[in-house]
Length: 390
Image 1 (cartoon, rainbow, N blue to C red):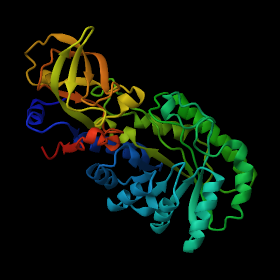
Image 2: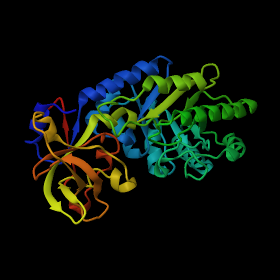
Image 3: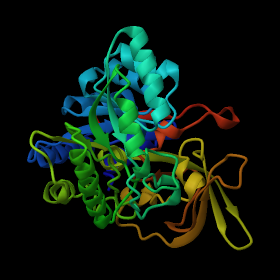
Image 4: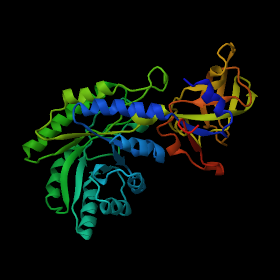
């Protein structure tokens, strides 16, 4: 829900831009910390969801660590003053240069995805005369019940070490003297709204833990990843995810050994609802079977709908400016200016009768929005605006 004074300020701000509601972000972080602290859980923010400097500064101020998937994300986390001892480095394709960056900063842990990767990290750590902490990212073969492009925990996915490889990997680890095994890492997917998927993960982690115990291998840290989804359809009704239920489930179903710590890597659940892509209508075009609302924002600013047909609630903000006016609703295909037919945010979208210059909001865009933007068609890179600076 946007207040009238905010909408009036939008009209005077060059579009398109990302609008970040700082209060929503802070309230989200307060809830997250309250519920995770009940159980002593450690949360690393998944930097790939949004690496905007101000957003990162706020998240770090609430005591979260950083989950990074590239060398540049590690550099950005350090730049934003995240403690290196709370930085984890994940990713199926870490380059030698990226591994060296992480070693130079003495980060907390590498989440390793293959034996060959472990051998490379060991060789690079040996060259630097250091020991690298690692966690084995294990593929638990758990269905996340989410979109196929953001499912990561099945045997058919490219991620992680498969269960049948554990014997050979742990045997080889004995010879890798510059690695120290400190944890197990799991991540089954993103935008998961079915809690049973997380319960299934807990059951699988318990089984895998038993295997390590039987092999007399001590594990200090269990990292269960993230993936907790948000409500894209009702962003005002469900602005905050149910962190209480999420963390309680892991507390109830994970069977921990004495002294073990549990880590999470949450991204979307932290930042999605605080961000909105604001755009203006350039043209209204009458089609044969539909009307087109052509915006000045496109897939270069928000890639998700074009990439995997993701839904974002689309609003014409004039409905918030004068609530006494009853607007006639019409259906529009809401599209962008990019020379691609996939540059479409929504088809047959019900909007108040829309005209050139109207302000359009694409909601729940704080995660995987700005961070995936591009300069395709040599477009200007999208700017950011913050609620506490308007």
